[in-house]
Length: 182
Figure 1 (cartoon, rainbow, N blue to C red):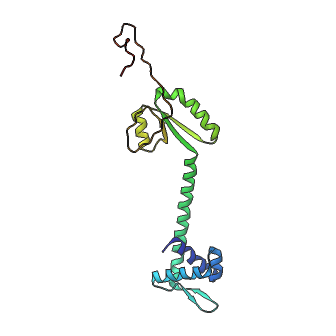
Figure 2 (figure 1 turned 90 degrees about the vertical axis):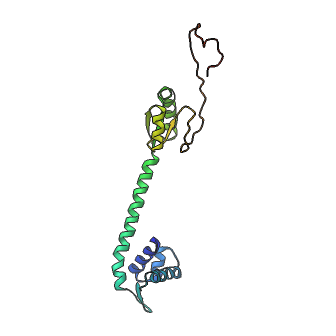
Figure 3 (figure 1 turned 60 degrees about the vertical axis):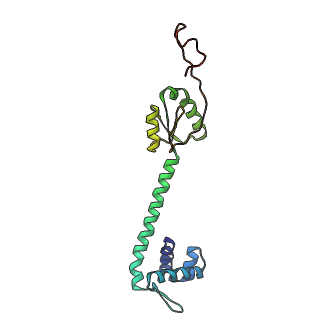
């Protein structure tokens, strides 16, 4: 038994006519008749009494109809909730960055994002790398700007830019004469 079967059942019960019910359901009349017959076979009962010009609802069908309506109403409610949640989610972005990077790149990134998506609500989170990773794994952040390497199988990353670091030491420091520092 499927949701479609229940919608066909309700249509036939409402119109008391297979042709009109089929038109309402946007299917052919033979297809509707076949599906109702399959539903009756599945349930092991007649849902409708048919004669040449009349279709009547059986007592068992009369008991089933309110349940079928509730099921389809509940499914509609679930779809509405999901659509609302999806629309709400599409209009939000939570973005994290570690503190030494956040103040330098987030103003420019937010400006560019808002140029393309002016209605987007952006939530910014400034945290240490390990905290940002935890928020990503808990799905409390959509994305984060992190320093590489990020070693976690559940996360994907893309290199955005490279920013070389420079070490400053006094001229007499033991590291002062080295070209590179590990």
